[in-house]
Image (cartoon, rainbow, N blue to C red; front, side):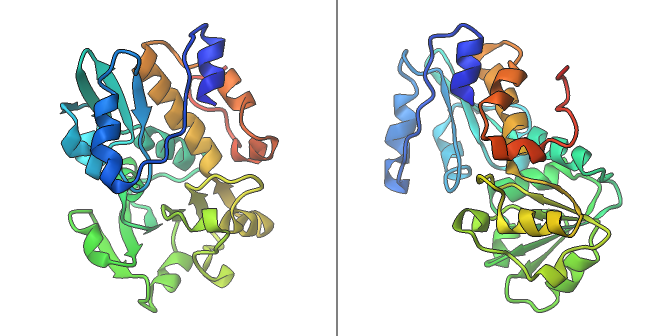
Length: 255
């Protein structure tokens, strides 16, 4: 997607995937200070740990407490969080008004923290394997093995999955716990949709998956690196055909 954006913008840039273990994070970040690097995206599990290795934060990164985008400014590295913009697009797409909404968020990591900012004004409940990981987040926190949270999910206005379970083809909850009058957002993007997304669509629920979030946050990252508006048509066209159902409404700013 980003490679397609660079090409459409006439930039001779490359977007490369780098698998970085925890012990290799300082070295990987240091390499971004070199002239040939323009920046990076950061994903699970480094979104929080990377913050201490940067020279500054901008936008909502400090409020979120996680960074997913880095840009180079001379030898300085500046971190930001574009997940907030992506999640806001998804929330708008499923027609949920955040203020006053009952929202259950699965997870308590960097993406869940971005969701807390994007959903300011909502009544939030975070479900995590380690509830202490949700410390500092607004709302309540329940353990994954707490028998009460599926009932909260069923009565929620929005269920948002911020765990990586969908990448392993796992369903994070029983289908009976899906909110029949609510909406579902899964931040995971896989071809054909995650089990959660496929089931929600079978039930006719309002649903957006990670492809729409990826596009929206990627557009903000592109602008951070280049200082130019993102070529959204080229970026969307580069995504798998199976992602087409992820865009029930146009992304803001697109024509």
